[in-house]
Length: 318
Image 1 (tube, rainbow, N blue to C red):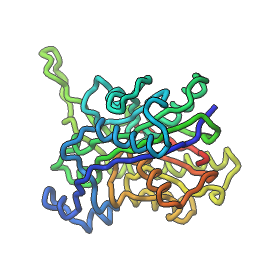
Image 2: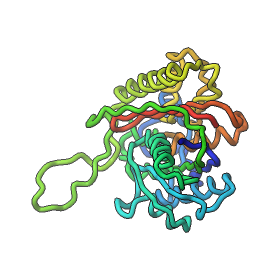
Image 3: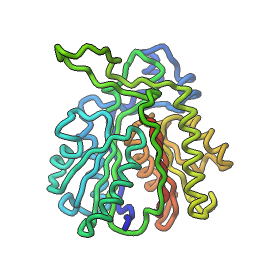
């Protein structure tokens, strides 16, 4: 048993930071960022934690679905930038919403929202009494950036996206891969102050090897989408839209060329929000839905990649 998407929601902080403002923080320019990454501005939290943004996106999704927190049987969240290790961000969202259902957090970096969908499908299959599951990707990436590192701080932004899933038959197929232990993208924890621990650790910020990330991203997007199409005997003409992780506009364009499709078939909003990690796909999905470009019954492919290294794509009927 799988699910269908009942409602979506998003939240981004009100503070928009332009590329010109970024050029006052690090040595960069609007032209360089726009050309290399595709970002023109990003939203940055000034006084909201990750869980608070997640709860606002979750409430928006509940409102869109026409239900309340009391209707939700499970909350699944994903983040790499929660304000606490315990309680989990999912538990804090549950509290803020006034829900009483189980809540659990998952970490698969930028691909995590798709892993939430896969996990939700498993819960629906395991628990026939579950009718609705809330999934939330939320990030305050600005809190784990080295703001002196121009190769990373210009790329990312803060925000949250959510969806209410209900028991149904819309989740058709998925493919996921992990290349574990790779340090192409990593976010070290602080090593703490134990008097017995003597290993050194990198600073607790995002460290990313740009060229290797780009190569992995393009290859994984193309491979995952191709597998889903071939395995389900579909062509790109059967797909209304592809909703990719918003990491770099050039990645989306390169993948489009490799797949032989018009780039406009890949929804993009990175110019306004930057890379919001696990919030990226649900924010894009919500904006695509709100744009009126998709209708019930359309087939979509969601795809993402990130630290792990990990990647995932899923085929669903909206």
